[in-house]
Amino acid sequence: MPEDNAEHSDTGVIVVGAGPTGLLLAGDLAAAGVPVTLVERHEHRSELTRAFVVHARTLEQFDQRGVADALVAHGRQVAAIRLFDKAVVDMSGLPSRYPYMLVAPQYETEGVLLRRARAAGVEFVRPAELADLVQDAQGVTATLADGRTIRARYLVGADGHRSTVRRLVGEPFPGRSVVKSVMLADVLLKDEPPGGGATNSIGDRFTFIAPFGDGYYRVISWDRTKPADEHDPVDLEELKDIARSVLGTDFGMYGPRWSSRFHSDERQVQRYRVGRVFLAGDAAHVHSPAGGQGMNTGLQDAANLSWKLASALTGGPDLLDSYQAERRPVGAKVIRGSGALLRLAMLRSTAIRTTRNELVSAALHVPLTARRLPLAMSGLRVKYPAPRGAHPLVGARAQDARLRGEPKRLYEALRAGRFVLLDTGGLHEREAVDVAATGRLDLLVGIDPDAPSMLVRPDGYVTWAADSAYPDPKGLRRALREWVTG
Ligand SMILES: Cc1cc2nc3c(=O)[nH]c(=O)nc-3n(C[C@H](O)[C@H](O)[C@H](O)COP(=O)(O)OP(=O)(O)OC[C@H]3O[C@@H](n4cnc5c(N)ncnc54)[C@H](O)[C@@H]3O)c2cc1C
Image (cartoon, rainbow, N blue to C red):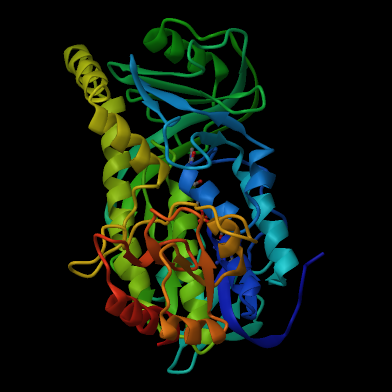
């Protein structure tokens, strides 16, 4: 049965697409008290899984919404990943409550977010397909394929790489196709690969194997000399043959539960915002699955945009242009990083591959690279633009911190969806107390007296910080006006 069925309704935000990006965004908006309608083409959520790696920053965002434990319970924690030969990226030293990659099927991530969105009061309209949209100075009118219309102040296209919203606002999706007809299968293995997974390429052939967390392994396999149609079935014997030729063994692959082919593009829109319409997730950027970044980046888009939409709709400052300014550079970096990883993985010449293995392995023994690469892959290194001369923490994610009293941790405090002013040094800013009285800010006291005081946004990023080396009370007043009160 369709979940809802309004002929015509007015709402705050229409979100198109109930993939991970749309579900997180809609859940956040509803939790902030914004009326939100989520339009999804399919009646039920897909049981297929594309993404299977959830990175530390995404788990931190889930923690800030009280749903991390539910997802962690469904996944397997993988502390290190072998890139090439002996080159291993070790996540175990990440400065996070989640120093690992969580291997969990995409449908589990979506399930957690769907339950949260329902509980928060999102209005679902499914199955329903967005067919048209028109925007004017006051809002956006969306027309569904069956003729129903919905009117809202804003609309977000979280409708995937073939985004209808992107087409309707006339935004091009420049870029190029990188690989075509790559085979994908979830199989059982008789022999476990040493270190849990394996990857290699020789000549025109490539295989990647990673544990899926529930006994199955994800195999990604490609033979450049055999271009196949996207809809051709995947042959287990061919997967085994390619694995034997590049890894020396097929680890006794058997019992595939699912297989498919995919092609991978590298594309990004110029404009994440077109008037009252926003693009997020795969609708705004796509790239290769190398490094497991796509879903994670879309979820971070959603976390960045949701509270800004809520601010604009609930009398707070209009911060909506900062969505593009903050998230487009991150998307571009992810496309470059995952593209570099894919190209390194698919090198043809044996001599160049040997040099690659040696160079990457050597680089990962340099302490700085060994620290930075896991930080970059996990999403913890993302930093948004900061004013000149600001404390080095401004723009970075706020690390979780212990608090005096309840709630016990900063990330628990962020579950309220408000700004937090974390005071570790006896700040007595009159203006902060006044702002707290408006209900947009919580004043909290940390227990570590040496940590900086910080103004933390609802998405967990620092907008102002100060300590004895950078005392900056004027900056706090400015940040409160710019970000919290308007
Ligand atoms: C092989 C493979 C492996 C991957 N592995 C990883 C990984 O390990 N980690 C990672 O982070 N990412 C990974 N990804 C990428 C990840 O799957 C995507 O980035 C992610 O699904 C994007 O989420 P989204 O919500 O933006 O879009 P989608 O998941 O594509 O959701 C879009 C939704 O919009 C709906 N929709 C579309 N058009 C309309 C319309 N007109 N009206 C109404 N509804 C509409 C669709 O039905 C769909 O439900 C992988 C991808 C592939 C192909």
